[in-house]
Length: 229
Image (cartoon, rainbow, N blue to C red; front, top):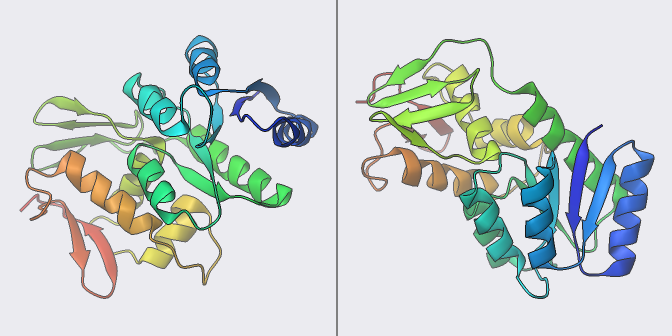
């Protein structure tokens, strides 16, 4: 059974999340503060974490940083307050895979959870290791190495990288990436793609300000170079 950890200090919201997720067939654990949530995540290695950013004892940003520092591969869906764009961006930079803004609809949250779990379960393709410059990308193993050293990517960052890999050097638009990687509907606008591209560049590029691998196609989108040049 798929295990979901909910880290939420509002008892009514936590109860509602647990109830609806269990109806969908998930095994759900709930923690009411950041320290307890981090301890349970470390002990149980959940398949997905739903994380409120505003928590007692340890806020969600610190929990997220610790989880990614531990190498937890599970997708993290963060809950943010309405209009707090800076919190969303900061959460994505720390390794969150998606976010839902409070107040949110149950159906929307369940759809986001299902999409994140589906992508995590799907993993990579059977493609061999791809070499681009000093990068080695293994889709099946979902690993990346740069100059022989492992690079830690969040699940969403790796999904984005795979979407670029599949184009074999052709460009892909932001709209296509939002639909393929995040499951958003056509017509949705978001800075999510740009934020994750910037994070990929920080981790993969020798000089993120002058990228060699993840390239911008002006007015069109992004592409992954096939030669590292």
